[in-house]
Length: 388
Image (cartoon, rainbow, N blue to C red; front, side, top):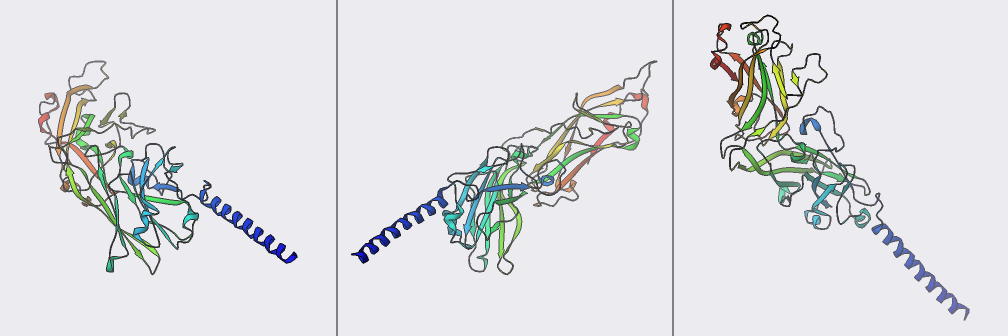
């Protein structure tokens, strides 16, 4: 009897331990503790994405994209994305401090996996794909997604598409998945420079700058792709070029007004007038080359050949024309003039088609076709040329 009692006791004890074991395992897979949830963070080089000067990578802030798409595979198996992340929508609720998605994934549920690789892009679109090569290309993975811009150029960083610098590899579970992103557009900026002789005589005051193009001329959409190659010998990834394909164009001409930006704040001589949102180029300022507006971005394509429309007026700041005793204010000799500059890829000396994240300067040089008599009240204004 004593021996039978011991067997029953041991069976009951084993059953109790089994219940405790299941309870602990259930805790590991369902507890929403941040250390156990697969969580994300984002960083990007602002110098390539926006018009701010910055070095290195930084946290997400107000005005940046608020969504991204992520693919996740384990053990180098492309089919595993169906179990892990298959173009999962991830979004921020407080300017990048926290990124959320649903349903949540837990590291403990994949503790049997050897490696994890994550591919990301932003902002999120439903038509993205991740494919794996075969045969000799079996270590190549291509991430693609469609991108559509609200206009042929962008200055709002929230609309700039981004793609992962390289996949994020994890050999240990429990770590945060931190994506670094590259910009997929080409960057540009517009500066104005007055000829030195002209600057001694006149001020040119820029009031408005527009970028436009003929109907069906400027690129606004396409498909972005990048191929990543895994190198088994080093257990690292290499990233290929960012490629645009299937580029679409405007259905109609669109005039885009480049927003005014005061680049001269804090300078001893500031050519920017915040109140009237104007830029004065002339003799009064030692630096006669000044930028208008923020950097802007466009799809890197031979089709990006916009027309830049510049509205300005001309001042005689020294009152050289019929000066009246006591006059101190500049005399406006020409008002509300508009110059149109048709650009092509030949205008950008360092512009390489297809190269992304590259800044290309467009310098508008204002000079007279020839010197003329000042007392003619700028009757020869038609000989003032505006060129790149």
